Amino acid sequence: MAVVEFEVRGAVRHIRLNRPEKRNALNPAMVSGLMEAFSQEPAPGERVALIEAAGTVFCAGLDLRERDNSAEGIKPLEAMLHAIETYPLPVVAAVQGDAIAGGNELAMHCDLVVASTTARFGMSVAQIGLAPSWFLCKKLLEIAGPVATRRILMLGDPLPAQEIYDLGLISHIATPDEFAGKVDAILSRIGANAPLALKAIKAVLVRQMTFRDTIDHKDLDEILGRVRTSKDAEEGIAAFMQRRKPNFQEH
Image 1 (spheres, rainbow, N blue to C red):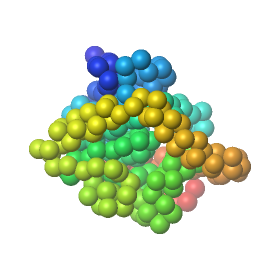
Image 2 (tube, one colour):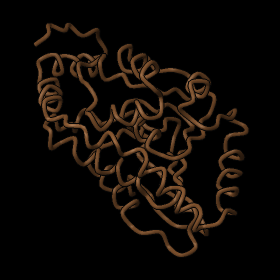
Image 3 (cartoon, rainbow, N blue to C red):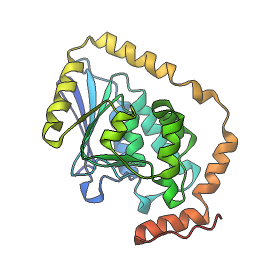
Image 4 (cartoon, rainbow, N blue to C red):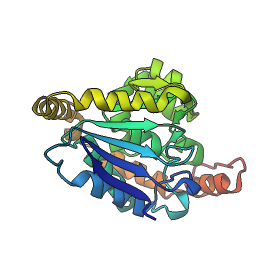
């Protein structure tokens, strides 16, 4: 069974995370599957893409058991998220459960996010001795602003969907009973819009949000690289796996 299911049905490109037994944690096969789904140009009848997930969790982040802590290891994730962000048509995330770390980033790189009121969003990386890359911080700053971004990254605690909605990070929330209907209504509304207008709007929005890409950040990449390979990162991940409190030593 594919860990990422992909098919076009009518006006909607359906992409489904299908690793519920691992809380849809992103491993290389999932990243590759998502990249493939968003690398293909839209068919003539397509109007919108939908990312959804099997099970009760949208995405718990990167699978730490298959983690590559090198700079090269993070590049496939960033390339995949960039493919979603720059896909020519609107992309909707249907977040029925928790979206944490890489799962949070996956949702935030979509154009619209519909979340169940039972879902939580967060970036818990600092709690396990890691730090998000320049690319991932950039996206959070774009949609959340400096104050909310500091809160999300520096505290690391997941926030309920209602609070994330109130902060303006996601576009829609719905109760579990109303969730599927809300998603369908948004897909139908987008699908009824003019296709050339949708593509033009998406292209303009993507272009206007790329200005931070030109800022030099090689020195920051080096700092982030030292974090990824630090003893604290090893300790934090080990503590997470063993369900204990980490003992960080700043090395």
